[in-house]
Image (cartoon, rainbow, N blue to C red; front, top):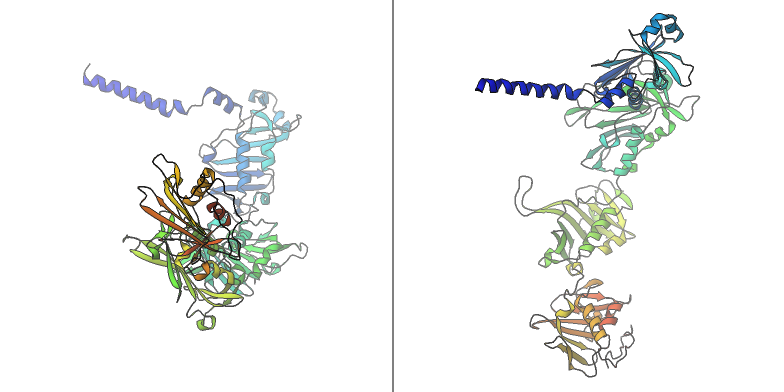
Amino acid sequence: MNWRNTLILAFIALAGFAYFRFFEMKRPSTEEAKRQAQNVVNFDRNKIDGIVIQNGDQKIEIRRRENKWRLETPIKDQADGALVENLLSDLETWQKEGTIPAKDIETDKSKLTEYGLNNPKLKLKLLGRDKPPEILFGKDAALEGRMYVRFQNSKETFLATQSVKKDIDKKPEEFRDRKLTDVTTAQVRRIALRTPAGEMELEKKGEHWDILKPLRARADDGKVGDLISQITAARIQQFVADDRGDLRPYGLAEPRGSITLYDQEQKKDQKVELGDSIKVFGREDKGQTLQIGSVPEKEKDQIYVRFAPRGSVYTLPKKIEEILNTKPADLRDYHLVRIDTNILDRITIDAPGKGKTVLARKDGNWTVATRNNAPADSTAVRRLIDTLQNERVTRFVEDIASSLPKYGLDKPQLQLTFSSFASENTAETKAGEQPFAAIAFGKEGDNVYARLTDEPFVVAVRRGLLDQISPDPLQWQELAIFKFKPEQIHRLSVTTDRELSLERDQTNQWHWLKGSDQINQANLQSLLNTLSNLRAVRWLGATTQQHGFEKPKLVLAFTTSPDNKVSHKLTIGAQNNDGTWCARVDGREGAFEISNPDLNILKLPLAAQATATPSPSPSGTTSPIHK
């Protein structure tokens, strides 16, 4: 076989494959062919771009425009998309329940008149590629719920259900969309509100809303969302008139107010009728404007509105006029501060004369950067962040802070700074700390005056908030005091009014160095378990005489492996009013609290013959702990 024959055979094989691929594979299966043969009409709904309904002298035309259905005749308006899609679905599943062949009709030509198909009142035409013939709807059949239908230019007649007839036998206004707008709340990026009290403008930046006019302030995202949803969820009560005539009867020649919604798609180059426009940052954005008019004389629970994008006058529920009562204070964000935790890497707590603490995030945990990045109580740091994010101001004191000394904000008693941090330069950020929010706290009273340093407002917050923000770095240390395994402790000394000490031997058995009687192994193991994983209730800060360490109630000294070279010492002093006990450890600065249950375990008698004594009393007296 030469190369020419090979090439010819290859070409024939390729052509056969192409035929199978593009023709045979497109043919329906036997089962699908049976189903299609039973359908009244077969079509691809994705290729349908229009529907024409002829109902007597009345013609209704609906067209698909940019994937949305619109009424074109006899009214130009937004069509009810769900209703149109339901019609197409009913057409797809519309099946023949009987067939009267064309030859039977030819034999008795009066049958078309009998079936109401000679010159029917109701007709349906689909527009688009591969469209089916026009469908003619005749009379109801004797069989309940059935009717006669046929195609234009065909005398073959079918018996089918009345479902499609019910879908199309409607007045034009019934095809109009009663949902005021197809814009969703999430799509809206800007709002302009005009009321008898003045004008307001709001804009969404990222995930949050800001008030731009009449003042620049943070807005409450939830309240703005509720305001927008009153428009995006509104449903039309009555279709009244188009807006090209006299609007005075509806109170819309000079509307009482209006609200305009702008979404990200409504830009200058979009060729859509969208109503009024405003200049924003040097470019023209067009929005959807709803004007609010008067209350109808008969329907007191409704109100006239004009919606510019649809060019019509409608009525909506009267509740919509509550928009006109909206004031800037109603939409302001009462949260003290917004903290973007995605970029938060540093928290600086600065109290002049009391010290400064810098908390830094590292690998998902927090450290005290001002103490050589010692581990911080990450739970407490996250609790502070949550508290600040949820904190609400008690009132707005001044919108323009004209006199900071009046509120003690020229020299704040405490300032919090939130920053991001980059270890090296990148295309987006410079290396180092980049503050993005700061709060200053001023004078105290029943409340505390506060101010975000990048905002002009003075606000009041509850006094108790400051009690949760300590500038002392010692109080931000992690609560874990020791992190050992009990078997790592090899020598232990317990001192109350006298000293007892024990040591493990080479067989891992404990024996007395100072003490007598048999060792209470259960009590000893409980003590080791608690001591090796001791946690503070909270840190108190620097040690003072009030902590009672000069005359301790209990001192535990121990060494840990390897080779018993690492020594540790826990000193327990005075009891606090809440039942906790003051404590400290050698090698770490500051005092902390331990719980009374932990103390009770640490003072368990280690001699088998001994009995437990009562807890040391708040008065400072104590009983011997060991026999």
